[in-house]
Length: 444
Image 1 (cartoon, one colour):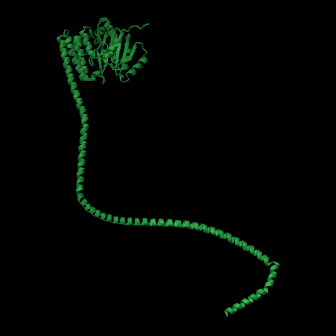
Image 2 (cartoon, helix red, strand yellow):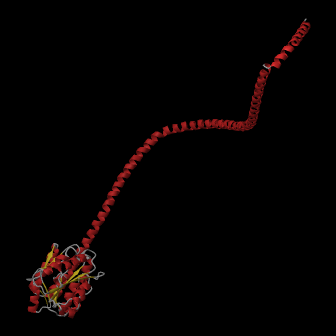
């Protein structure tokens, strides 16, 4: 079963309004008239708007709410036209994502449209956080409309509808006149003039529930005031010839007043921008001036200090000259010392050469000594061999002598030896006597 066709299609274009979009959506949900669909279109916001919208849709779980996002920013006019193309309701109502509605607004406008067959309807606007000049300008337009009840006449004096958040119109208006034109700042104003040119029935009911229009730093009208004022004037110049058949002298006077106000605003914006530029320049220059003054003070301090140094240097110049003379004497002394040192160096070089010769002689002597030692070592080894041989010969001789002594002792003890000794004793005695006689005769 297909859902019933909604009576009113509410279109909310969203762009970088994360702090306020929830309040805008809840003001639609709070409407006493509930036969609506809600189309939420995020125009590629670069803040958290899309995340906020997704959270809201998940929380609401309401089939009347549809939401989608652009891949790139298309602008307010294109986003609103896309919303009207997708809308299914018999009436269209627009609410910007930073504004809100009174809870009875849709019910009031729907009943009025059904009863009196208006094509386009708007209500009063409460300007939230607006500067005093905005309040004064809007009250003047409100007073003019309430006294004249001439929508086009008041519209020529200024866009008293204020915003597309105050647009409530039938589907047939869109089908007959199309969507918004690609004006950056006055697409709502241009649409109202186009509807007036088409001869449609437009009204503003000042006794109706209000639209809450929020002033803040991100309002489109604050984006580039010069361009917005230029667009507004260009729009009036474009539509003056197109609406000439519908314009009265009062309308033209209103247009004259409007253009005069725009020129005043342009001049005021120029003065404001000039003042801001001067303030910015002052903010830029004052630190530079302060730096310059500080630099001058530092330069003067350095100059004074340098002058004191020059005076001190002048006072020390005589002392430096004496020091220079003393230094020259030191240089002469140093040169003499260098000459003595060079002489000592020559002497030392001669001694070094002599020492080298000594070392060479010593090395030759050491080589000869080593050779003699080698020879002595060889002789020592040969002598040791001889000593070993001698010790062996002496040991053999001692052994032989010992053997002979043993044999002699054995012979002496033998009978034959004793017999021989006894036989030889007279002979030996006679020999001794003869030898003594010869000795005496020799020494006599």
